Length: 293
Image 1 (cartoon, rainbow, N blue to C red):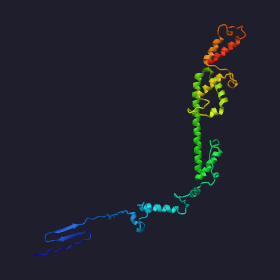
Image 2: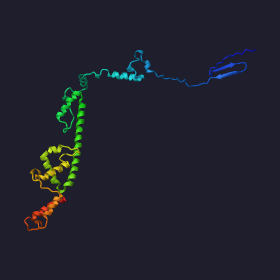
Image 3: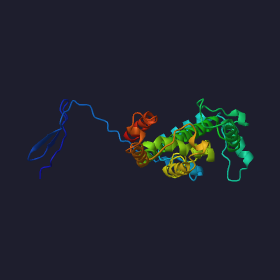
Image 4: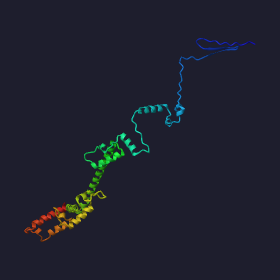
């Protein structure tokens, strides 16, 4: 039998592998390319905890870190705090004196005089109240701006409360006046004057104006109270306290009765020659004005 001889042939420009056999010759060409090979970079995420030395793996302060980036940021932040004046927070066993030291370092005054309040010239807090509050503020360790803020808030609250009370009182007064005008008619002014004169002489003006009832009205403006004093004033109409400088007063029906009495047949009202004629005519005129007013 013939022996087969295999011999590789290499060409310079094209890499070829030629295999000669007794039957055929096969040529395989490798593909050519002008592009440079691309390097593939793979990023491997490193477990931060695996970098912690064995002796520190159980440290609780390191358990919250999962990335090196977070650890570095925390370290840099702590470095910035080095050298700053730190204030230790007292624990549950701390005494009042321990807390006072903390307040002092934070800026709390040691005496009440250390507090100054930014209040308007007209405010609802007197000097005694402010002094008492400052003494308490020292005990509580309040900072000046905190104490000032509390005082301003309280003053504003009181102002709003007083404004609401005044508005409610005025509304109640107007409602009461409407009720009394309908009931008293043309004698409203006289009855009201007599009632207030008697009430003031009996209870005092300050008590009448400063005593507030449940509906928001002042005692001196309450319809029930005014009518009670007006009724009592009628019974004491000859009393100078009640009458004062005001003329006598009557209800609408009383005025009409008086007109009828002055204008009845045979009265001086109808006789011009009568000496009381002019007086009666003038009186009737005034009475009719009361009804029409």
